[in-house]
Image (tube, rainbow, N blue to C red; front, side, top):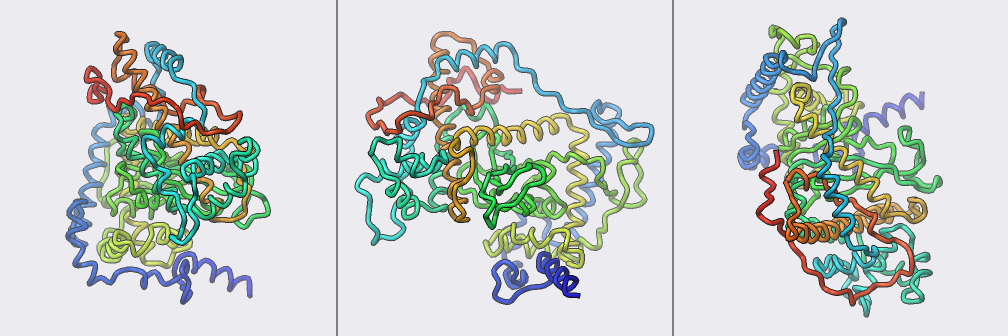
Length: 536
């Protein structure tokens, strides 16, 4: 009896059907949102930029037309669709998108660039990047009454290296020949650095990175990808758990990576959390000049409520769904039939439910836009436990529309399939790059403090982004040198380069900061003979 009661209580707390007075995470979600009268005043200003209708009836009409037109276009284009086919049992099959072959000229260019890239120590990279950006200036005492450091830049950079590489304060102090003590590094970490300051420093690096022309050959900055990777923790840790897919104990570092390769934001979450819950938070908390409009992810980062919420917030969710053939696609109405793709559809959208609860959904998204509610707070409640929740049913129905449209576009557009695959591959590459930067202690976080865990992940992101920025600076300088020597360039050749190069970077040895490094000329532009607009 007790097990039955508590299992139902736990399920309804997770779904928001039951609330705890005074609780931050399990409070009544209705009390956290703006009232509908307040939302009505903000409704036109919210809907107009996103081209959203301002009434439930018009909203449903627009969605129905969108779904109908997409399905009809995909059906008509099926005879020319070389990717999609049906077997004898009517099961759909989609050919795997082939990787773009790397031309011999691109390989030759990469070889030439690698030969000319200057060899640097990771600490030298921090000195040079700080000389350009001064991103460490955000670190400092938490209170004006706290003691200030006599050599702040030196200590802050050494602290960043110690925790960004994950070697820790003690190991760092052992390799500095007495220049800094482990106690000084530890105190600086606790008293001068917060997650908010790390995020602000990260924004400085991203904004500077966006000023360079070279990243525009790799992407526009409008698409981004979200993905998580396992970070090893002590087993005796409240956040640590065994991950079924990764096969190890730890927590999840969850990243948002732009298609230009730069890391935009990160979270540190427990293994048991459905990662799709945090997929939107990273975009809202990203204060940089790079503001993505399209979000790619894999199967674990999507659900029907996520599709619905991103649509209402003007974000295009385009995940790589592994088991898409097992998902239900929905018809605009029961009477509609299609000549070629009718076998894809198995159910119909409940349009009356969407019209009835349009106000509830708009009240939620406007409350999010006004900062009253985080998307993750809502999505935690709109999980599979929310069967009785009217808000869940409304978001689920809208998600069915949006996901059906996306899947129809995905199976009929080879270019979209390629975009989803390549952008999600970039975030996988970032995991390996960041792992190379955070090489200490075999990647295990040597702390049980949840605040410190979040900081350690962001330290490594900051160090990784600094190296990405320095690589772009050096690559751009080498490109200028090669152009002056008559080396043939095309935009396609530059598009095959990646800033995740590490072969020319040294991580070990005596850890000293060399502030006497000579100034080097910095080029932000690529000569006009090569224009990103020429890329096909």
